[in-house]
Image 1 (cartoon, rainbow, N blue to C red):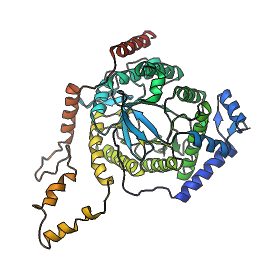
Image 2: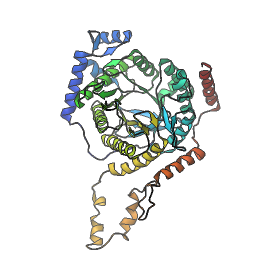
Image 3: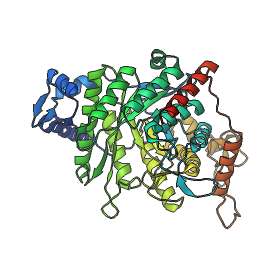
Image 4: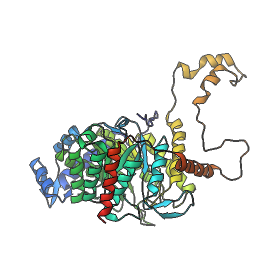
Length: 475
């Protein structure tokens, strides 16, 4: 099992008092204002459980929230395609994931920003499979050369066949999810076996403010009954789809997640659900929802602390930028977001390598961020204070005006210091950066030589091929 990243630095955005105030405000929103739900069956079942209908909205009493929190699991073990445990989320370990597809790709071989094509998924699968700090991959269904009605199914199928680590997936519609569950059934040898060792988890969203549309609740029902762990993640934009104030946005976002939790547990008590949150700014200059704003990173860290308050695993965002090309802005914004996520001890962190406020994907940035994560890991490991680390005997032996270069203690411990494969500390360096050249060479080597290892039987491989043909035949 990959150990993930663990921070030994005490970091808090919210004090215990602030968390309690946000929690109380959340309960007030849910009980007095309520949420909009389209699904009549869900509304009836909630009313039977003690909820109230008010002006067309469903108001949830605190007891329903507590009941759902009591039934949802605090930790979830995720597996890879070869049925080996890879991540135990909810244990203060942080794991990162990138995308299998996106609207656009910054081509690492030509530097062209172009439409993402289905064949690009194979390269992304190889890169993510190879890099040690990428633990999962998100398949969303956006390839430009695939018909929309089968986009999410086909990319999920491609990732199933070409990626050995844990898979995060979403669907364009309910039929897409039904097809994806059939794909899971084939790959796992039955959904019962999948439940025992889940190698994939689902991504779903409400619509802020406080709206659970029919499609979202239908999806929650399907994955809950199938035993697929699911993320429920509102994307709140301050001043657009949530209050412009930080505390107000956190309270609304929290209300959306917790009411989604109630709905999920209504379908299947004990269904594994992951608290997701993307509270960011609505940029009044450009009208975009920012993926690089400092407020975005701070509020995600705060939301992670809210999830921890409820003992729920958390799904965050990092390695993102509003920059359109690989430049100083991209590296600055991405690095800051990693730092924030690591210090806040988010469990799962998605979107590594996403740029242009979630329009494009950069394979080069994924490789670079893998190295930046190694760098930050050295920072968050913090300072151990014990007799061995204090090294008082070594200090005594060297004495004033001595040096430690030839001391045995140095020889035994200097390799604990981090040395980069990409960054240079040479005393004499080239006048231009060599980093991107090294990244491009690494991507070429991965693309040419790396083989993904998945232990599927010939029968499973054939069934997956047959299902791909079945999808393509629809269009």
